[in-house]
Image 1: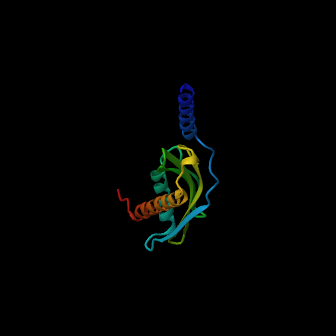
Image 2: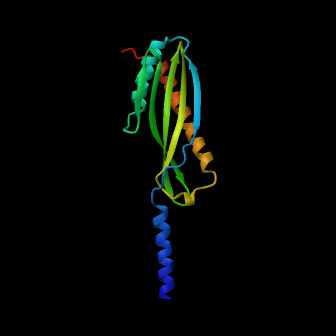
Image 3: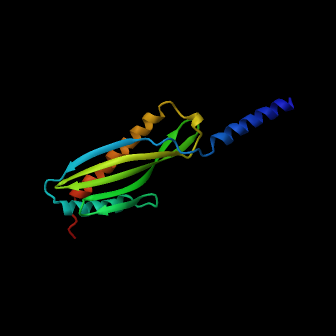
Length: 161
């Protein structure tokens, strides 16, 4: 009887300790989201200036950084991290790293979001639901759409102080 209790307790302990450890990063997900926005009443310089201000305001954590900004080429590039909350057998948080490139030409902007990778920081992949990839794709698209709408609103808003 003692041996059975010990084996059951050991099994439960191993189950919980294995499922709560961090795992290695998953294979890079080459997910891409792109949108072109036209601002008919603004010139490229104004769009570039407002896009830089938006990027600073939108990405204000230590995990987000503008890595490249060139007014001549009309390019702003940076990266950010967002959390993908998911509940499977245990609660866990996956961190998705995304590279954002803003290209400005004439009176148009092209926003390109490229998902670099996702790091699993919670439960073991043993407990992942079959629809996990679909869920992450949905969250990626929702995040990109939300940021794009925020970007559009920020560019169209005049700051007359």
